[in-house]
Amino acid sequence: MGKKKAKGTAKPPPLETSVTMVQSILRKRLAQMSSPPEIQGYTKERQQLFDLLKRTTVSGESNSVLLIGPRGSGKTMLLQSVLTELKEDENIHQNLLQVHLNGLLQTDDRIALKEITRQLQLENTVGDRVFGSFSETLQFLLEALKKGSSQTSKPILFVLDEFDLFAHHRNQTLLYNLFDVSQSAQTPICVVGVTCRLDVIELLEKRVKSRFSHRQIHLFNTHGFYDFSQMCTSYLSLTPGELDATVTEPWNTHVQELVSEPSVRDVLQRQFNLNKDVRGLIALLTHPICRLSPTHPVLEAGDFLDSFKKLTTDTKSAMLHGVSILELCLIIAMKHLMDIYDGEPFNFEMVYSEYLKFAQRKSSMQVYEKPVVLKAFEHLMTLEFIRALDGSGSRVQKEYKLMSLLIHPSQIVDALQKYPNCPTEVKQWAGNSVV
View (cartoon, rainbow, N blue to C red):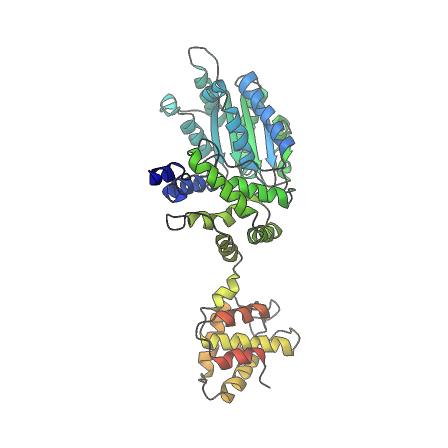
């Protein structure tokens, strides 16, 4: 009986049993396949966008607006958050039609029109009809949406991602017609352009500009570290209803405790100082979430540290781990030349002379012939560790072309520490020049 009582008073089942479901939810959130948490600090901008879209969906008022801000500032996330709230109204959820276009995918108006037809499910209505212009086709599509029992047209939301790329379409026909319809009372539509270009209005033709409402909502990364850490907590926490409360509550408690740990806060602070936009945070959280498994059921501070190290890996230092010993010796020779001549450019003959002084004094080092060394030198140029100066003419022999080193001395020292089976004398030479 004692054992049964113990079972009755036991804590909720361990997270191991539901870690796969938790991981699936969080991965979808990071991939923005589900509603992500709202970015802090955009209360006024969010309300402005919400009111605008609601007037279109409820009152049938046509509008156009631009969401402008740097990449990673949360433009798309803010729009998704507003649409999620609007869809909670059953009438809006059933009536609002959405068309999402992207300037990177719909590279001309013909492709864009096909995508509009597909997303509005009007392929059968268009059939094999031939239209004289883009405007006629778009008008036909909008008229087709009016054919219903109520003889009323559903409001349509057009979201144009990478809006500035649509301005490069021939005659800006798509933008002209969408803005033209948004000014008329024919069909309630709202055109939302999402762009990172502050000068996007200057890209519009005069006739397009005259039909645009000139509403602009600017989003900038003005949030502080507190908002950044709160955003991290929101991304990692489960919302009520996603899973059973016996899983949600202990998981959220664990996340709160984890984010408050000094080591995790230190990683978040360093990430914030490096890159405080949402994409940077998502990149930081991806590795810890992907590590979740039945054998690793909870997030750990070490996961965040590993993730930050991967994100901040010096690519040049990492590439140095793959060069040959000869190439490494040449880079060290260049480092010494830069120290000796106060950063002045060098040529192959100078590097070769420095390399010979070292190789001939160390009996254990193999001394390569000059053509072999020149080949290694050229390979370093291919890897972009060194480059020829712009002023060096094409008539100059390659052995005498002035070069500059594209690696910082600290990167060379770091690479030597991690270089597999690096000879001791090479390490010593890196620290002390052979005179």
